[in-house]
Length: 173
Image (cartoon, rainbow, N blue to C red; front, side, top):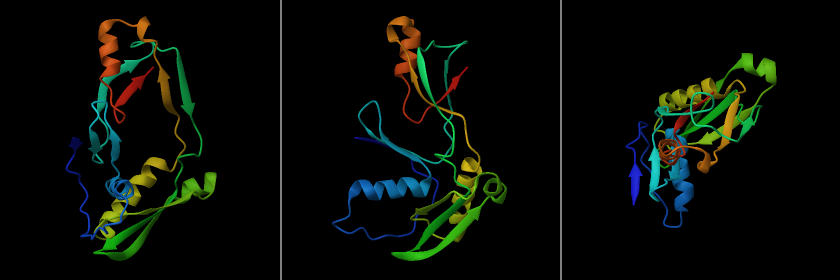
């Protein structure tokens, strides 16, 4: 069973070897799309395209569902100010596009990452690299985990929590 978005990226034609690891290949597609791939709460293989996650309508904190603990991530774990996107020309590497944010590099040093994709040309590779640098050139204050005591919330709040998927955006106040 599956729940798969069509995707927005145009992928190059590719020949998949019989010995290719399916998970690795699907992760390459996920990277190429800049999407999200996971097993949903309904047990279905789920793929979400690169459209930014929309707000789920679920709020935690002062004006929403109470929580008892949270984990914050802040720092350079997901800081990328130099991004190399390898794109395809059929079954061969077509080239590499590099996108940099020199202002970020001046503040934090160079944090470089390379993505091997199935993109079909330099223009979509440039667009992907630009999107990644725009998102990850500065450290972000991010809440990675929230703990909710389900016995301490009402039935509607329980339904709201249980309705969430991994890629859903929530508000924390």
